[in-house]
Amino acid sequence: MIRSPRRRLLAGITALVTTALTATACAGAGSFTDGGGDAVTIALVSNSQMKDAISLSGQFEQQNPGVKLKFVTLSENEARAKITASVSTGGGEFDVVMISNYETQMWAQNGWLVNLSPYMDRTPGYDADDFIPTLKDALSYRGGMYSAPFYGESSFLMYNKKMLAAAGVTMPDKPTWPQVAEAARKLDKPGVSGICLRGKPGWGEVLAPLDTVINAFGGRWYDENWNAQLTSPQVKAAVQFYVDTVRQVGEPGAASSGFQECGNLLSQGQTAMWYDATSAVSVLESPDTSTIAGDVGYAQAPSMAKGDNGWLYTWSLGIPSSSTKKDDAWKFINWMTDKKYIAHVADALGASHVPPGSRLSTYQLPAYTAVSQAYAEPTLSAMTAANQLKPSLQPVPYTGVQFLAIPEFQDLGTRVSQQISAAIAGQISVDDALKQSQTYAEAVGDTYKKER
Image (cartoon, rainbow, N blue to C red):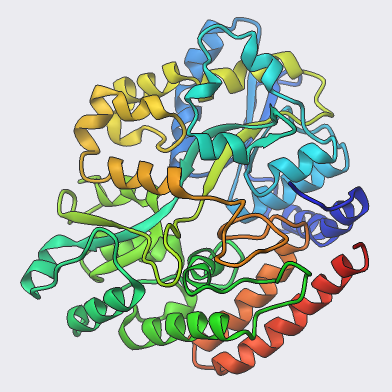
């Protein structure tokens, strides 16, 4: 579990609170759907599945007369900042917040979230045991669930089957990173990159895939005594491999490419492969957004010294302890994370809109099974194999696969990601990027050593 004391968590959010205030001053508070002053106020990330929920929320209000909803939708970075600032200070602005497995356990330990398990237990048919076990564990603290998963994801390798067949390349179900790099070299040609890998700065951008590569190569951020390891041979080999691969056979402008950019490139036939989130299937398999729908292959996250390297992530819904409408807030969370909602989405919007990766029963839903034959099994396998308690080959004092579940990681990860992105851009060497990153990591590690 998280070992950080309350004062560490409070210190870790100071920069984020400043970011929230700056974002609000510069960009406003996002998009509002106003249900009135007595409404349950819900802060959501403005991703497509969340927008679907808002479009269907009339059903909730019909089923719960007297409960009005007010939605605040924000971009991912702004949502993290504003929600963190509000919940950590007990601001009471929101009754339901969209958070992830990065925040949930830390915030539960600090008393900032309501334990949802009593609500789940007394809600007929809710079936919390139907949640994918790794997600349920990631959102639990001392036996209680403090947020409920709306959708979940791991990571895997996606590829254009026609391009690989034309090049005579066969992708194993469980490839190694050298096999992927060799395939990328064969597939790379003018106008089509061999592979797309994120290079955009951000702890949730380039570091998300790169951290799984570091894990695969046997690397880690810290040893069990909080000694920084970012200049270790394993980390150096992983980062050099990643940077070399994306610079030699990756997408143009890789240093500014993130999830959306890579998704566009693969879906439009401008890259042959992409390693990223399993949730990308909603983009790749929709004929409305993809020219390769039905022609995408899927393989497990590539391995090296370590296998089972897919990450674990979920957008989930929690109730801040400061909410004065906890019972009505739960009614909404129940509606948005229940099996019935998933079936309703399939009926109302089509199975391709179903939020994936939260419940085991989703993978038995006939409508979803029909459209997900190519990717359902790889997605479920990746999610059930992900282990955020043991992310690395060697012992570590932290949890988390593609992030470190410590308050400082939002700032530390961002700083390190900037160094890596600069190396991808060719502005600095990998060695120089890691030397500076090591300095950042040592400063954080030293504070943990003092508490031992």
